[in-house]
Length: 161
Image: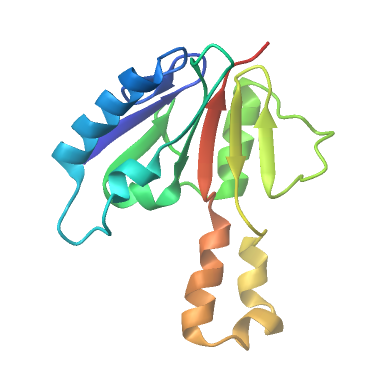
């Protein structure tokens, strides 16, 4: 599988913090030419990279969605970000650099300020929830969709001050 490295302080894949919009567009065009598949929605690869710029037009934020996991193995220090359960991922990264425990979105959004790394999911689901009545009563298709919340939905890096 293709690897997309998430490197805080540097970038995600070929897209680097500090690049210009033109440089980012060139990177995304190369990714789209190489990885866009006929079964993808139009512009799937192009739309998968959310990039923000500072006042000087330089990249200061890069976010990717978990949907890229079918195309790339998204790795942070050899940890597969979108195929490692959220609780385990947070524990492992927290051993490297602590997350901000004062964050009010705790459990859905984890910020690792020293790394300039954020991980987000829309809702919290724990392994033990799979055995609870409320979960068992859901339709199988809804169970499957809900189980996505065992993992993070997006990851981003940003420039730290």
